[in-house]
Structures are given as structure tokens and as C-alpha cells.
Image (cartoon, rainbow, N blue to C red; front, side, top):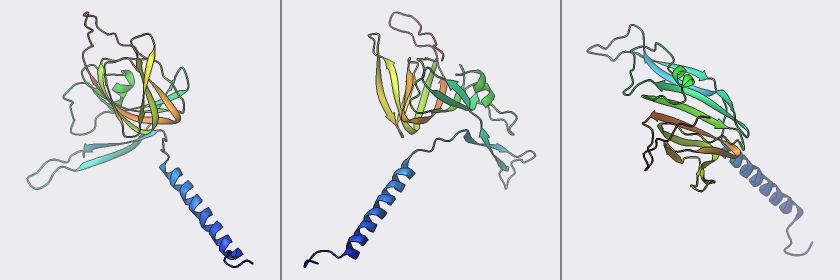
Length: 211
């Protein structure tokens, strides 16, 4: 063996170290990948039946933990899953002392509630594209996982896109739009608050366009 050349044992140790570093890097990348499992978990609070406010104690609060099923929406390309988590028929909403009904049922009947709000979780499978739609509402969309492209009209008969990633917030103000998921899919939570219809400069009301 030439003087200064690494020994076979040193070479093997170096290979093992590099292999370990590679495994650790792959594990880190895997852990960073979003988990977009459905159906969506939902936690609801309410006051316990028969529990009241006293001078010394607050009424007991119960936590109801359940799994909310999702509705499958077939899109022009791919599949979306919508979980209607809650809705309020009016603003301000009414919190009954005890939980009397599952108010998400209202959201299942109406995509938006004209005088109230809807809370929804949406999951787009990879490369899913939905159709253009518009609702009379202000929509607060918080991207939770993945990558999704917001598509809007360009005013010339075509569309333009804005890429949105985890942590981004999209506020829809009664505008026509569509969504296109990236290669890993996308998941976001939306709060839709009923609003008056948008009126253009010529005085025309922009009609709702449903999926």
C-alpha cells in the first residue's frame, strides 16, 4: 500500500458514514412531505348538560371529538374531497348552551350561506383541476399542504395562474376562479362569509357560477 493512501477499513468506514447521511436526508425529506389523510378530524366544544355557572366555578365544558366524512367531487380533471365542518345561518352566530345539532349539515345543503358562514376543508388529489366558479361571499383560504395554482380570468378570454404553497392565504372577494393542484396534491381550509353580489362599473351584478 502506498504511503499516505487510506486503508481499506478507513474507506469502508467512509462509505458507511455517507450511506448513513443519505438515509438521514431521505428520512428528513419524507417527514417534510404533507400528510393529507381523509376524512378530516373535527373537535367541537359544548357545555355539559345540567352544568351551570356559579359564584365559584365555570360550567363544565365537554369536548366532542369525531371524524367528519368528506364528499367526493368529480372535477373536469381528477377528484376533490370536501369536508363541511361547520356553518352558521346568521351573523352573529348563535351558540346554544349545549350542542343541539350538527350545524355542518347546513353547509352540506348550501355551498355558501348568504347571511352566515361556512367552514370547509378541501383536498385535491394530485393534478386535479376544478371548473371555474364564483360565489357571493368573502372566502378566506389557508393553504395547509401541497401546492395549488389559483386560476383567474385574464380579461382577454384566457386565464392566468398564481402558485400558492403551504402557509399562503388566498382571499377571494366574489371573483371567478378555479384551482389546479400540483403533483403532490393540495389541502386547504376555507371560511366563507356570505356577502352581497359584486357590481361591475356598468351596474351589472356578477352572477354566482356554481361547480
